[in-house]
Image (cartoon, rainbow, N blue to C red; front, side, top):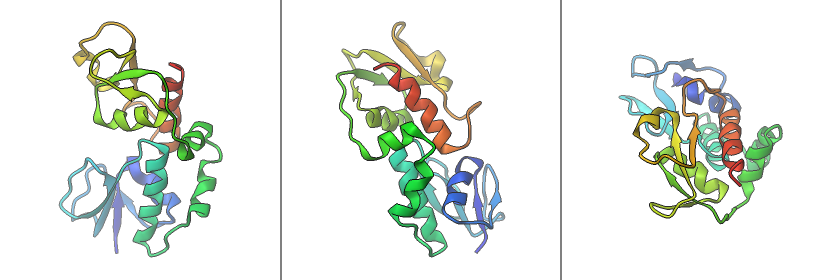
Amino acid sequence: MKIVTTPMCEEIVKLAGISEYSINKFPTKDDGDLAILLSESKVDIESVPIKINTSKQIFESIKEVSKVIGNELSDEEILPFFEDYKLCKKYLKSDFKRDTSVKVYSEFLKDIVSDVGFDIAFDNFDYVIYPDYLKNDVMEKDNLVEIPSHNDISKNPFEKAELRYSILENLI
């Protein structure tokens, strides 16, 4: 089986134990038999769609992708991948609840905002959280929090989550 992945998912593919794969930002059936890519992506070949915005999503994605080669990693085999990432490790096993309400301008940010323990609200909120690519669409003027999306940010999902968690933790 010829596996193709996107640059954003390559780290998950490696951690899952897949060593033979190709990389293409927009995989097609000409590139391989199976694509491993972000869940929002649409392709014309069989695929394993994954989410990698939160620690729990990263963990589950490594587990799911490891099944592709018939060698599903156990929880104990995946946990060491989190050792060097303090915030990813913190939010992997805990369910936090905070007294902070936020308005969120993007679906992908809702996952990480909920992970940190903020309540998502449509009115009476403390902060407005939005991805950098929606900066011009934000209607509010105060208590704005911009979160890096995909450009100018590490492709490593742990580093990306660490950065986003740290920005949100600064609100606490």
